[in-house]
Length: 480
Image (cartoon, rainbow, N blue to C red; front, side, top):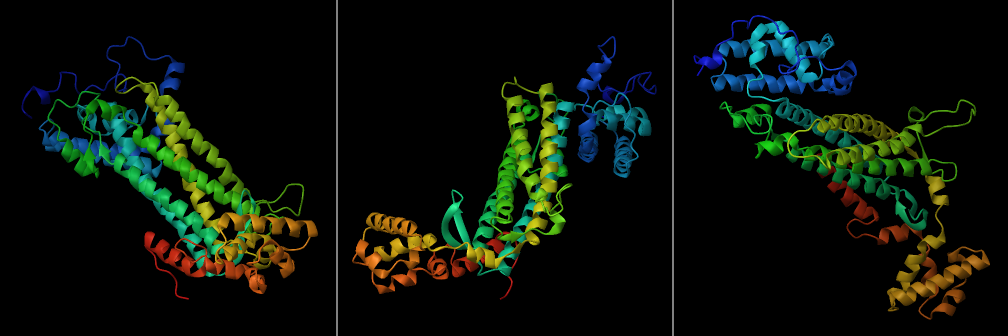
C-alpha cells in the first residue's frame, strides 16, 4: 500500500499551509475573533498534552503497520512528538494564536519540527476519537493517583485509631447524646466510607479503560487501522464496541464525577465532625496549628479553615456532576461541541480532590484528642439502652423495657439527678425485675465492651476492624 497513491504528495506538499488549523478548507474567512475565543479550549485542555502525544505516537505506529506511512516517516513523527512532549514538560512550549485546542497546538508544532509529514498523522483520525482517547488516558492516571491519596487518608485514620485504642467518647445521633463509643470506632467509620470511595474509583477505572481511537468522527476507520494494537499499546483493557457511541460517550466522566461528589460528601462530613469536636463547646480534639489560621482582628482565634474549606469544596464537586449531567441530557447522537464542556468540571474535580485529600490526611495525622473532655461529656442517660437491655435479659419484652426506662429517664430529669443516681427503689417502683445490681449498668466502659459483635465498638471488635482495614490497604497492624 505504501507505493500506491495514498503515499504520493501533491505538488505543493512542501509549502506550509496558511493556517495550521485542522479544518477550514471550505471556509472563505477565518472565525470572528470573539467566536474564536468562545470556541477555543487550549486554555484548559493543554494539560492533556502528554496523553495527546502518547496517543499520536501510537497512532503513527498504527499508520505504519497499516502501510499508510513508511517506517522512516513513523520514526520522524515519533521523534518530533517526543520533542513536543519535552517542550511541554519543560514549560518552553509556546502557545500561538490559532492553537484552538491541544490537538491543533501539538500538530502545528510537529509541522514546524518535521515538515509536511506531520500532515499524515491525522490520516483516518478525527478530533472526536482523539479527544475521547486523550481524556481517557489522562483520567486513568488521575484515578490511580487519587486512589493513592484516598489510601493515605485511610492510613492516617488507622494510625490514629491504633494510637488511641481504648479512648472513650460520646456517640451522637441527630447531634444528640446517644451511646458511648470508642474514639477509634468513630475514626474507623470514616475509613469504611473511604474504602467504598476507593472501590468506586477502581470500578470506574474499568469503564475508563476502553479505547475509542479508530472510531473516526463517528463511522469508524476505513484505512485498516488495527484498533486492538492501539488499545494494547496505550494500556487500555478493551476497545469501544460502537464507533458512534465511542465519540459521544461521557458516561465514564459522569461516573467519575459522581464518585468524586460522593467522596466529597464524606470528606465534608469528616470535616464537620472535627470542626464540632474541636470547638470550645465540645473540646474533644485539638487541630494542629499547621492546619488552622487566625483572625485578622481577634488575637485569640484559632480557626479550622482547612476543614471549613474541605466542607465548602463539596459544593463544587456536586456542582461539577450536575453541570455535566445537564450538558449531556439532551444531546443528539455522536459528537457535539457541547461535549467540550466536559473537561472543566472534570479537571476541577480532579484538582479539588487532589488538594483536599492530602490536607485532610495531614489534619487527621496530627489530631490531638483530649480524653478528659471526652470523659466529662459522657453521662448516665447515654446508658439508657443498656438499662433496657438489663430488663430484656430478665425476660421483659424490649418494647416494655423501652417504656420503663423512658419513664426513669424522665424522673431523673425532673429530679435533676443523673440517671444512675436514682435510688434502687425508684427503679423497682417501675419494674420488679430490677435488683440492687442495676447500678453496675452505669459503666460506660462496660457498655462499650458489651458490643463485641463484628462491626461493634467493643475493643475486641475494634481490633478486628483495624486488622481487616489494614488488609484492605495493604498494610499490617502495629503490634501492641
